[in-house]
Image (cartoon, rainbow, N blue to C red; front, top):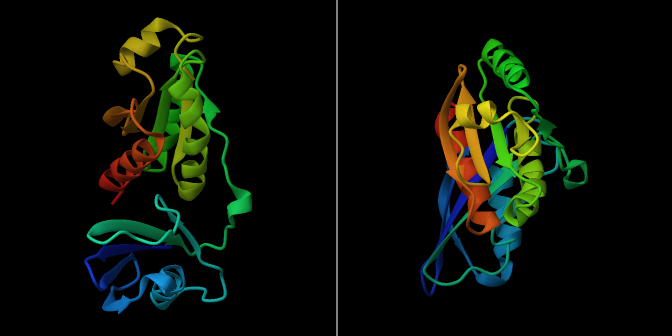
Length: 204
């Protein structure tokens, strides 16, 4: 179970709305910047209705720092009891077309997509992004499996099949077909947010 907190920070007050899935939305509230983190946690806690004894783990690209006026901040919390110390989840290597077919068949059987990170050892952005994807993978386990492909160590027929031309490229495959992708040539935290949005778009 998870909840998402959208924080919009007009000046001089901060308007907060919370939506959760599957928990119902909380009412709007306002709070001062000095108690931003505490009240964000409290608001997310208020949307919990399953297993209330479990801790709330909050993550944000702003790291719960004080918000700037006029900015929008997206936070989310995990209610499954896993702690940050259990992160990350190592990505599983795909080394052949047969391995990709096997991963796709397993995902199709469970009606879940898979995420494939197409990367190369010589690509500095790929190497920097991979551990961040491993942290993201922990948020979706065991439902969605994350894989990686080193394009220099697999048959080029596999790379052509995925139509990969730039790296890193993070693709979502579902029902045996490539459905969507994110080209990861910009800042890593933005790439991770785009990958998360891609997953949420295709997982209903």
